[in-house]
Length: 69
Image (tube, rainbow, N blue to C red; front, side, top):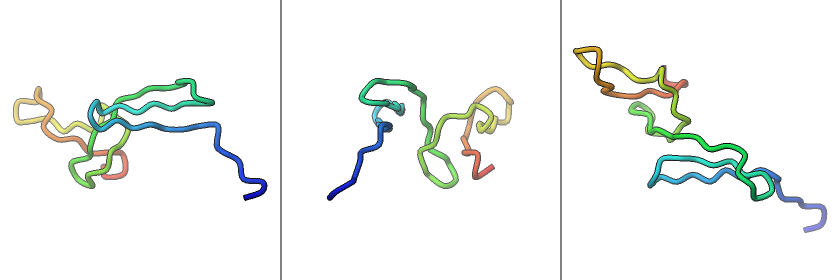
């Protein structure tokens, strides 16, 4: 294919460690934690504001991504 180019950026997701890495030209430029949304089940970037607290307001019971909140 003539004129096709590769992107400089690649995102690698590890379900085992629940982390993602963004690479630019094979060098890590960002690393962040992931969480699975309890509503839509998609893996999304962890946002601490998405946790819903339990009865005692201390325990994190479920987590919703930005789109499901």
